Image (cartoon, rainbow, N blue to C red):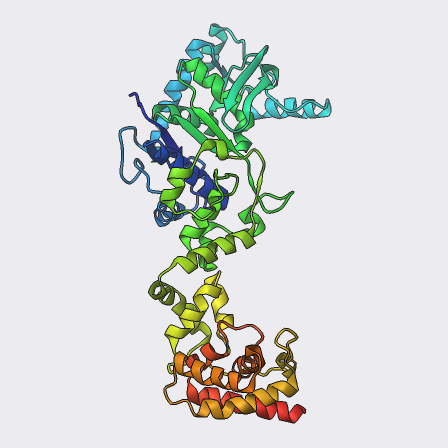
Length: 487
């Protein structure tokens, strides 16, 4: 089967969660396919049963669907080159390995574990990097047949050239050349007849018509071996795109094992799916212009392999939070209120408050939904607070001026009949103008009296509308008492 267009694949192992590096690989493979009107394929590589986690395949499906990285061919929807689950493709690998044996590019190896361990110990004692010593490379046909007839267990190994060099091209790292003498005769088929990951990967990519292979740069050292397999079969070599790792800091890779966030963790922390995908795209890839906030459709248009960096990308929670904030600000007020309400209700249980106003003041100030409960925890009940909060250098207030301001404001607030933003604004700012003082001189004490906090979503006016007239007056009176008691 031949394919005339770009075909990429995401081939995860079902090991439990979708970490950021994995999701980035899926995203780049998706973007490259869609940018070129190609095909994005999902293949599940489930042959390592020791690491298989129950339910992990569903996590892969659900994550890709949630992020919009919808596959064109895959286990659930089929396609022309299925099956798309590696464990269901097992029958063909031995046949491909036998083709290599016939070509002289692979060979039977009958060495048992004891001999291999002995060789390894000797090599380590000699300061040599452990590798297979080629003991079975040149067995005669008669020796091989005799061992097969005797039922001696065997593996099939790739016969690496022992002289010269192998060069491959990577779109990110350029041309890379290695000495063939350092390439180990890797196992292709294990004693149980099952393929190794490296062999199955090459055969699957070829038989599925994969034209571009996107993966982590930890596979760079294996790529010469892959190339030699392609060449031995006479197959076209795909375009390689190796991506540098995503790092926690300058020395540590991002890792779930170290407690770093998976995609599911980030969503649970209140990040928007679109913001996470946008940020992950920028981990090791730079768009051509200054824009950093992209929809998935815009990423498809912007994505170019040439923008992928050789350098590791540092996962920066501050930047992710900023991008998340940009997405939150783009939500419609109705959608934001709907999404924010569960977080508001964690600490704000009152039914007599203006929730629409709460959402309105929160939206421009929210970068992460999980920050909301702490921002509105003063609404149900005024917390105990220190009168030192009334002192603000920029507003030129202190406890004395704040007492004067609250005493002036109380009758003004008592006189407001229609308790809404416009009426409050008109009444309070008329008083400010009458007294000839700065806005902050009156508004800062009001904010502190109503919230007992230094930082709030919205100022005193908005808080007054949110908590209502009765509670506003009660809190202002309490503030006056508090300031008098400390005077």
